[in-house]
Structure formats: structure tokens, C-alpha cells
Image 1: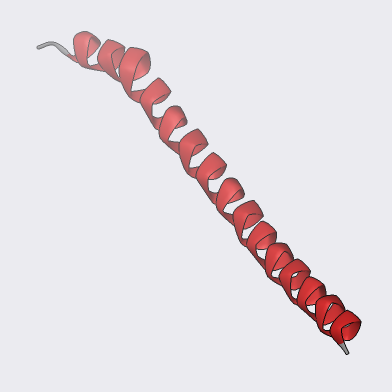
Image 2 (image 1 turned 180 degrees about the vertical axis):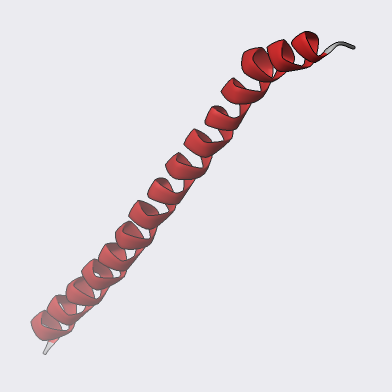
Length: 58
């Protein structure tokens, strides 16, 4: 394999693959943060519903 073949392989395959991995990592991190916030909000909502339910029973 010659140097030009290696450079061509890196530019045609390596660079796009690297960008894809970076993009996937960013998307997964962003979705993970949003899911954590959603989970926290759902827990707060459940607590609020339980407190309202207890107040109406008393």
C-alpha cells in the first residue's frame, strides 16, 4: 500500500467515521441529560399528585 493510498483511505473513510462517532456521542449525551430532567420532573409530578390526593382525603 502506497502513501497516497493510505492518505486517500484516511480522508475518504477515517474522517467521516470519526465525525459520526463524535455526533453519536453528542446526541447520546444530550438525550441522556434530557431524560434525566424528564425523570426528575415526573417524580416531582408524582409527589404533587400524591400530596393533592392526600389533601382531598383529609
